[in-house]
Length: 147
Image 1: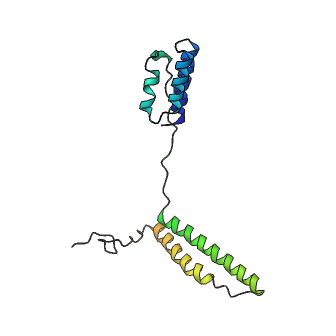
Image 2: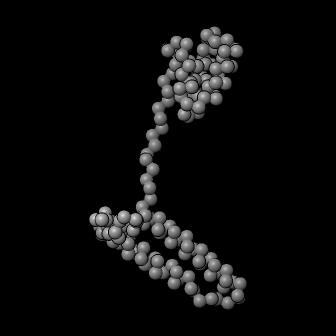
Image 3: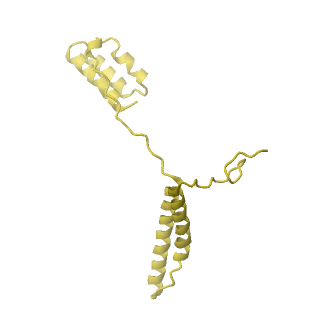
């Protein structure tokens, strides 16, 4: 339940109090109950004895597009980039700490991994299906185990 639902009921109660339909004590009690409501069913009895014409329509739910999950390849590229940057930072720190440039060993971590990811991206763009991860009961090609 949204805070907007609670506020809508509180506004209806304020209007009813302003029209003299509720005493101050009734208004105060119902508003406290509205703000303490956990589910929408808790709000219904608070306005049940008020005229229906006084109840404004609930606000339409905001349009939320379903959240797209990033592709496994995009996640793999993000992990590769983070690890590559971390290795580069470590290499720079070691080079600065020793006072002379150290061989760029981080290329051997980032390079082959990046080439594999680039080939996977090209294969996906060409329409080849990515390999299925191995899981218990599934052979490496993604078909059910015939056993």
